[in-house]
Amino acid sequence: MQVASSMMKKAGLLLLLVFLTALLPACSEDKPQGPPPRPPIPVKVAKATSRNVPVTLRAVGTVEAQATVELRARVGGQLAKVHFREGQDVRQGAPLFTIDSEPFQVALRRAEAQLLRQQALATTAREKERRYAVLVNEGLISRQDYDLLSAEAAALEAAVAADRATVEDARLQLAWSRISAPISGRTGRLLAHAGDLVRANDTQPLLVIHQVEPIDVSFTLPERDLPRLRQSLAAGALPVQALPEGAGTTAETGTLTFIDNEVDTTTGTIRLKATFANSGRTLWPGQFVTALITLSVLENATVVPGAAIQTGQQGTFVFVAKDDGSAELRPVETGLAEGGDTVIVRGLEPGATVVVDGQMRLYPGAKLDIKKL
View 1 (cartoon, rainbow, N blue to C red):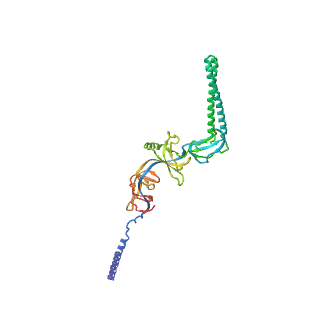
View 2: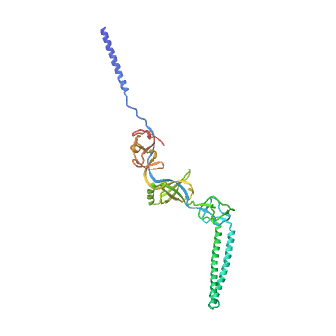
View 3: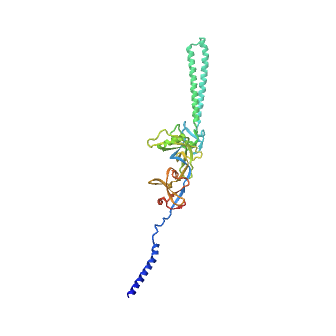
């Protein structure tokens, strides 16, 4: 019995040893291998480019006519004729209005007749004076009588001069009955019509004319921009672009022509004007436009989309997509921001691929899943 029991114990130990030997490979296979790799992070990228970037100042401006004339009658009367249509372009000297000229013609004829009468009287008096000069030398008349005749002749000649001025005034009144355009420009709303009675120098004008070629744009800039504005202006004329609001409009290019001689102390701004040829009538008086003054041009500047620029505790940086598909954090120094793009002054070269979307999940060395823009 003891021998049988001993043999059974040996057999049990042998079975346990075989079981443990079979279990060891399975345990080694279940040993942890570390955390699984992180999946690539989806991002959108863009290339850093090199191009010339204009350094500009931006302001909201108002289009102003270079010259505006309010036409008023210089003589009163009935408006006989209107020679143009509302909104028509007119040239300097073109006829616009005619006031009934008959009363002025009558006044001119009357003044001319009075002048002829006075000229005849003056001529007779001067001839009489010459005859009496011979008689006074011979002692046939007194010196006093001769002096009276001479004074009368001089008075009649003065009357002739006065009547001649009256004739000139009558001619001027007749000329003023025909109103012409003092400048070339575009007419506005007609404020008087044929048949109306108009008064000389009335408070309400007959018409307003705006000169629209060339035309000005007036705008203001903060006084802090004045030093570099004057510095750039000293190097030559500064180009200005005026972009009207609304779809389909094109920018008009002109030149800065005026800087005010003082800064407005209430707003801390200075007023400027730019002049535009406006041959295509892009700009219209009273219109609001965006004015862009080009101070200089940064040549061959490195430019990236503004969305690529990130700011952290260590300053400004971008994420660069490396050739192996991983992300690299690259500190950069930024410059001018214009039109959605930003100039990189230092830290990045043209041709680099930068991340423009998806940076919130990125970290240095992260694998990238690049999506197309």
